[in-house]
Length: 427
Image (cartoon, rainbow, N blue to C red; front, side, top):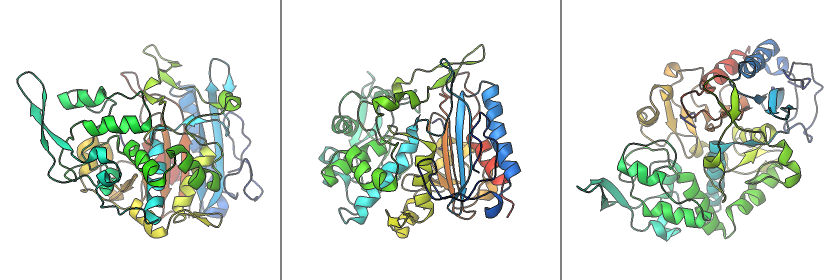
């Protein structure tokens, strides 16, 4: 993901044209009860236009394919697919396609942490070293000496769980967010070949960018939090997610791996070529051999819609509660200075804050695309998107698999996704 950001019953042909549905209960292909756009105050014509926009992207080779779902007031009212999940084999995109959701993993990890918080296992302002002793003596980067060796000083304060959840602990990242500074190069070279426990020990060895709590920086925070879940719960991170969240929530197609029989359903990741068109992308940076709380999950549009709708409902779905509405409010409330996102990401994040694992719209009037104050989301590096809009009642998920790194990357999808979504509101 370069910047923050990070649905109608239809005939599922390549464009996903709208057809009036019968109201139905939740089933294998219906992640939420169904209704019609008109019944919830949305324009079917404008939702069709939204699907056509992304279909046109496919025709321009800006993506191989997409899947799209929109719900309002807890009802699934529009779903569409377009393009291919595998261009080489001419396999069409479908609603059961599996996607690498990369950074959309992060909100799921935050929910897992907050479930343990609600269990009374820790306080948010506890030092994380109480549970992960490798963070007991953090250091802060102060520069380099004449030979280029990193210089550090002991941190003035311990790192708290809240600071890790809010990306304000000072941790760095191993992708392309800092390719200039000596510290950034050290984070880029971080060994990542072991287990989650091994990786977090390596993360703890590196200096922080700033004193804990003094700024905001996109980071390996969610991977640290995945390890916290393991230590506190006493079970592997992936098992905790499946036991406490995925299985009860009906997210049967979500996990850190994919069954051999389902492998043909996994969408191929592409990138733009200099001469135009698409080619298979190198996704080694996203192929973790351990349960990465930051980028590791594979999911479907319907599975993630259920997760997002659970949050939209204040932590409850189908009569089962996963989080208190108070805790969901904590997750989705700004925890950092109001200009923190703008300072890190730039103008595209004007009006955004950050909660405990999601970005939050603080100022919709000056947001660079259609938003309502209080909306929240966190998108994925491979052009995967979702949004919960409490004021409007909208919940939507758009999944693609395009690697937007490099000089020939196509445009950011998120502004168009939001503009087209909110344009469909008629009531």
